[in-house]
Amino acid sequence: MVNLSATFQNHTFANPLMNASGVHCYTTTQLDELLASSAGTLVTKSATMAYRQGNPKPRYRSLALGSINSMGLPNEGLPYYLDYVLAKQTQADVPTLFLSVAGISMQEDLDMLAQVDQSDFNGFTELNLSCPNVPGKPQVAYDFEATEKMLDSAFKLFHKPLGVKLPPYFDLAQFDIVAKILNQYPLAYINTINSVGNGLYIDVDSETVAIKPKGGFGGLGGAYVLPTALANVHAFRQRLNDSIAIIGTGGVQTGADVFAHILAGADLVQVGTQLAKDGPDVFARLTQELSDVMAQKDYHNLSDFKNNLKEL
Ligand SMILES: O=C1NC(=O)NC(C(=O)O)N1
Image (cartoon, rainbow, N blue to C red; front, side):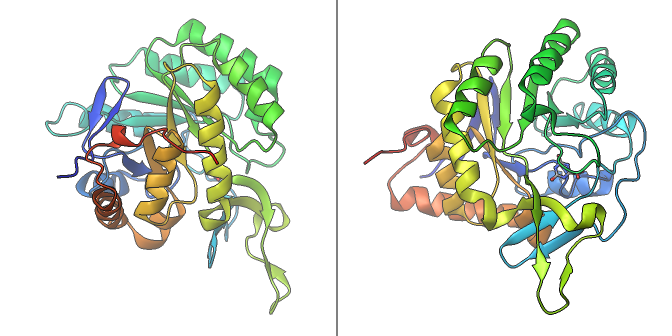
């Protein structure tokens, strides 16, 4: 018998799967659909303090090998999502929830964290340091000094469980540097990776880009990014204190991809592009496929193979 239950910082989820922030999580209707699905839990769309329209459309394009997006942090504003998780957490059989924030400035991040800290929210807060799509706003987590300053300030005022959403890194020396910074803080988790920033999809027939913002440059998701996502999960698992959990995000299309993320060291696994393509029913398929892969290998629990990637 296969048991998919996932433990994560003393919280238990029915399975390790959830949505990636930004996908099927803008409205309470979408969030309720996630709760009604086979997903183990959910994360809200990254919020700014106030409602934000985001970039001009078309700003998302589903592609054969994944997706490209330059949404630009459209969201209903922090109060909308905070109200949602506060209302939901009082209901029976609702799992511990995740709330994502992404200020346009460090001060906005701190203001939002302060507001969440003063609330009764009992779930995990995700500080998104890696949105690649706000014109003129660099991805914070590519600036190591700014990241350190941000976390110093955040932990001075925030006392609830906090995670950070990181961009992909591509250099082993960067993994060393970033892990050294992150290990200084009592982080509940890291979530790696965000979309691979500023890719450019070209439609040869029309000789045109796929999305309107930023001349077509946007974050890549889907099959394009699975090896990069697995590398970031594994590199950070090898370098971070055991006290910091890891959410693996990027490139999940099948149960075998979920298995690979966990083998690489992920404690939970998020699904973005494939959720956008298939809708919340994707979680029923992915949990079944993960269960099938485990049964074929005679594994009964996630701990039987988590972070057990073999080298040659
Ligand atoms: O962090 C983000 N990553 C993305 O790929 N897109 C969204 C966005 O543009 O809002 N934010």
